[in-house]
Image (cartoon, rainbow, N blue to C red; front, side):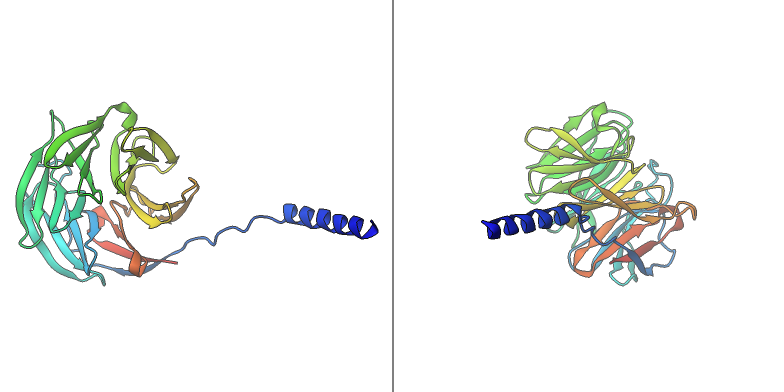
Length: 287
């Protein structure tokens, strides 16, 4: 009986010590600058990794809604060398991009373009519905379904099995910019008006907020395990955990350096940031 009491007392003390021990906090993520391109890019709005050794860069080269044909797509290597400045040109303020097999989908103010990556030629276009369209970001689900945000008209378009349609619309979208398809069942949306990262169930269209307080949300890229990197166009980059907690990784607002539509090269732990008006890409190693 005495031994039992002794063991019980030890168990109580041990559990008390465990309760008093603070939870182990994950090590803060740090960004270390690795390289930056020269400044021959022209208002780079978005960057997209092709899965091999190339970064596609969408250059607005003018006003963000001008139908001037001066926009172009560049090819940049993973070490920051501009391999082909004007790989394809004649575009209208190109912004978001999405890849599926040998097709590059790019927004072109009021329309979506499909460019053949083997020759850089536009093969097909789809026009937005209604006036005042401002098509912004693009994402492609694993099954090839394309989603496109319209930041001014509060719409999300879908291109599925050749059918182009308004898939979701309304003020509840709060000026959607960044979009990211997660598998074939979820769409992440950056609502610029409220600075929030939100998740939409593709089957029910139910929308929930994962994190907010991130100002003009722009690019969304997966870090893995339900975590994301999110950029604020004004010059911030955040890491958002699966539980909704967030950490600011970059703040270049005082230097007036923007951070537009980012991408993440997981195999090299490289976060690539287009600087918009500074006309270059900057790459950071995630540590």
